[in-house]
Length: 173
Image (cartoon, rainbow, N blue to C red):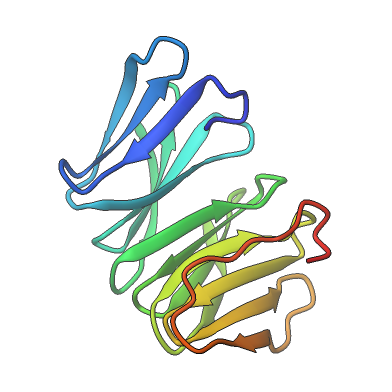
């Protein structure tokens, strides 16, 4: 859902596109075309942009009103699986089958950091204050990266692939 709850964005395997819908009328507002399957999407906190992650490794920013492509931010070397904005809307993180996590500064659209797992990264979550990034991977770990301070991540081991991560609303858990 868009931050103002007026739009819904969806992506699917069937037509290589993401779509934006009006929540009240059900009317399709925009079609965001990729050349591949769109694996994930997320609205920017201001609702004006939408980020998508493609099976071709692309990470794209779109105008959420017009549906026009605004920017392609570099690519993962394999499928991009997840995208997430921090709450302030100043950073975008993407994750892929290439075991990499890319952190983009939206003001400059430059790659500011890159983190790595030992296998595909499936999911991402920023802490509410934006200081940490949690990642979930097929390498049977979830990792907590300190974006502000750097250093080694906190690694939590699991018995199998980790498919999702989330922070509590207050960021303490």
